[in-house]
Image (cartoon, rainbow, N blue to C red; front, side):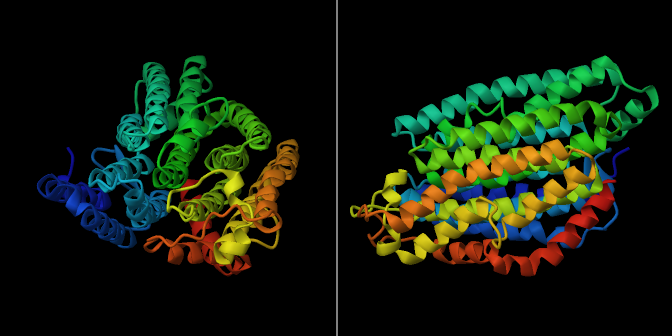
Length: 482
């Protein structure tokens, strides 16, 4: 018997978000595109309201809705990251979308629907809840990718994302069916108990492999990365920023919960898959970005590489590794969103958006503040000390070495050296090439400069001031998981 009142209280963030979404949807239906800005700000306030119950929840793990939903330290941590990423995506989007003449009220609603799916994902305690949240997020993101209907690249991005995403969802659903067929349950606790009690079953391992393949698509891990460069380039830049940050964090958090929570007893089996995904992602991402001329495609390969680095922390299957992964996701979200904020501010003399790497040439002379921020983000993404991006890489490498996976850590160091080339190339363009005449136009950027300053400060050595609280939060989550 489901205790509805208790379940509503435990799932308060999703309840608040869903109820507010319905209200904003009615406002958009009656007011149309005139209400786009108001709905965006209303969405930000709604995300803040949905985050408030996270601070009042019991620290212990709480199940709701008949065991389909879980509220614990991991879900709270990831929801705060996701809500922050979604709020930032709403705040910076409207000025950019207005410049492209696509500022419609559906954008903030789709972002909020995707965020609701992400919240369900990170609180999934059953394979059915996992699939429900994943599809709610994915369907919203497909539409967002094709949001600029007059741009052939955006339509192509949405179509590719949908076609490949549907295939990945089918693979994941087949894996869920196999697990259910061999275990007889879809709940994570029941699966964990079954794989511990019965030992290794080939059918369960096959189902797990297919589930991991479906989730690997969502985090752009090689060889399930094919959609990433085209979607990143074709989608409007605010959408790309959202897909590269909040969506990645939610999908990786779900992957962490599945392999540790449900299939922890099969670590020897899924570790092989995770190690392969990590090595392939680091290798292809580091090499594939070298020849890119479009800044958004470069960021796509950067995301593939960074997911490979994060997978290094997941491979050991230890509390130290989980803590390192959470630190990595937090710092990655801020660095990547900051880089996209810089790209949003990159405009030509006519006020039109520019996204080619050649357009960055000499930006330090026309907009020195923007160039300095972008240089900080690039060098931090490269993991160069003393910038804060160095710390999460060190953490995942240390977790791998501690677990005896030192060859994987060595591969990560080599990938870092290769990837540093294209990050340093961006800095070279900013400061050592003649100006390309881009970035000097005065445009409405809204709150983007404030967020950019905050993200740059976080990515700089000042970020080490937050290392203590972030480590403590990650340690608490890791203790709860293990």
